[in-house]
Length: 173
Image (cartoon, rainbow, N blue to C red):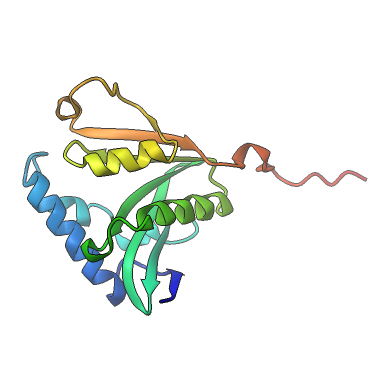
């Protein structure tokens, strides 16, 4: 059993089973609750939004098959917005989503971002628990019924970002 992260695009055929599962999950959990057609979230951004230099899309492959994945896109000059973090239903409870998020954070840092931002839906308590467990700060009151908010935003300073020099190199003589 060999696991390998690969950088690719949402159009990679290996991503299709994961994308299909995630789309079905959104349809099942939310339908048209947000005023959009069921599953509309999955077509909200063009594939280019998840491409370098501003974004990234990755898959975690096990023996050549995608078992988890995720992406980020530019939110602002210093912030990457995590999207599409997903684990194949047959491979849950192995810490794969944690690995995907850690790899996305590391890649965002390599691409010059200092902060990660994300949202999840009110009917995804497992995602909420994941992000809280990974040190993300909720930008909402945890004591209020999540359905009140609908969308649950989180943020996190990327580890080591404050230590990186992000300005132009000085050429002191």
